[in-house]
Amino acid sequence: MADLETRIAQGRGDEPADLVLRGGTVWDLVTDSRIAGDVAICDGTIVGIGATYEGRHIVDVTGLTLVPGFIDTHLHIESSLVTPFEFDRCVAPLGITTAICDPHEIANVIGPEGIRYFQEASQHTLMDIRVQLSSCVPSTDMETAGARIEAADLADLMGHPSGIGLAEFMNYPGVIHRDPAAMAKLQLFQGGHIDGHCPLLTGRDLNAYIAAGIRTEHEATTAQEAREKLQKGMRVLIREGSVSKDLHALQPLLTETTAPYMCLCTDDRNPLDIGEEGHLNHMIAELIRLGTPPLAAYRAASLSAAEAFGLRDRGQIAPGLRADIVALSDVETCTVETVFAGGVQITPAAFDARRTIPPVGRNSVKAPHVTARSFRTTANREHTDVIGILEGKILTEHLHETVSIVDGDKQPDPARDLARIAVIERHGINGNIATGFVRGFGLQAGAIASTVCHDHHNIACVGIDYDDMALAANRLSQIEGGFVVARQGAVLAELALPVAGLMSLEPFETVRLRLEELRSAARSLGVTLKEPFLQLAFLALPVIPALKITDRGMVDVTRFELLP
Image (cartoon, rainbow, N blue to C red; front, side):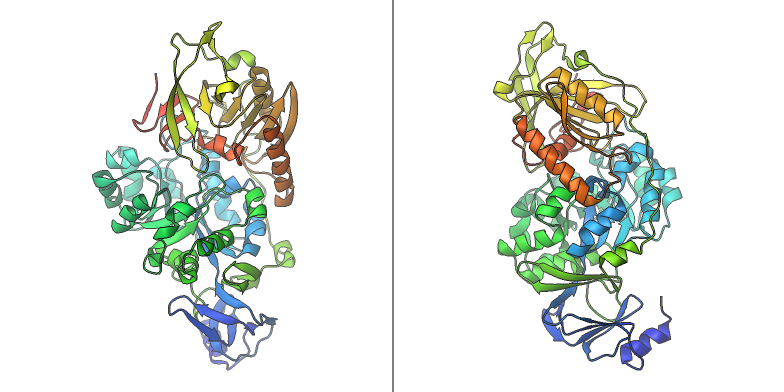
């Protein structure tokens, strides 16, 4: 950073600024004013607005509206299916200059090494990646993860420049019932920032959860739920991911009154949706289209987010703050023309100049070889618990069906949209295989399988034909993890994710193309879901009601217990 006197001198105009943005209009989100004049930048810090400056380098932004860089307040970069460096290249041009990530996906596979990988990567990206420390690895004791992170492990990871605090505390029963391991982690971060995760929690249980010092929530799915959480002091993050889509439900709550206490996040969004719709820029445009005041939408995307997470050096285009600036040609549609992150213009040349680091987590898929018989569900009663998918949500229904027993097996029934679902432990720990039923895919044949399986990231497989399920699952071991679609003994499409079975080593454009092929192949099996792979992944997350499945069996999340 330039020394103090240099910043002051450039701000006063006593010497040329390092960079000047000329011809644009600054939109101040505090006073809702439009400010004409140059923006002067000294070594990544804004030092002047609303005046005329000379600069060593001048960028013409004539006719453009300048707003603060967008802050994604909660996401898992692994769910973009690319490395942090490709994620940077994918979304920074859309205006995202800060991403607050929780690397608990990779941490569930390889432990603290995965968090350290993200911490080191954050030092080399153009956008500012802030790395929260994963609080729940694994999310519960009802699954087999590849690693376990306790309070002592978190203590060793604290103090990195990318850190803010403790990531989403998903084990909300552990909080409200004072589980000793949960208490140890919360004590470690008392007085600091702690992210929340408490779907459907209300009343005194919600009071208790917030009393632990937890301040944010991205799991609110109705305006009523979000309002109670706002009333009790939480900052509510409106989420719009590839599966979890809460924007339309929460939009009526986002006003100029509530905007200082609401933020935007994507949580889990893949390159296919980013390419077809966008990222936070899409959320902003959609909020405005639905009637949200533009000031409220842009505040939630920047200044409110910075304040919610204690990032006092950004969120406004003002002297002394980090030069995170988005230049828009159209405010209503959030049409981004150019972006500056820390004073660096986002260009292909800037990406090429970055240093990268080697990937980690290779050869992480150590699953048992499975056969068609591995997927039989032996039972002596026809009453059957069924996971009911709610498209656009990670919440599920707990359904009950009667399924006949044929040759000792409860078989899939495509006529009733009852597909077999299985989770196969893939970390080489116990070889568990659990099976059950799911409704909502629309599958008529074949199988799809994935190692993206929240949060333990075992193999999740859903299908109608057991042989195809075995083919798809075994193929994942051969390609170091990823997505596979199979039918009639052939692999129709696949995407290899060799970094911990979660991220590709290919450019995001290639990943997007593979996802298009996978989506087409899944539809050829009868799949009706827009995003079947991430929807499948969330069916294994036992902290989201109501019925889920892990390698240990079906989980009644409402009661927080494995079904017998």
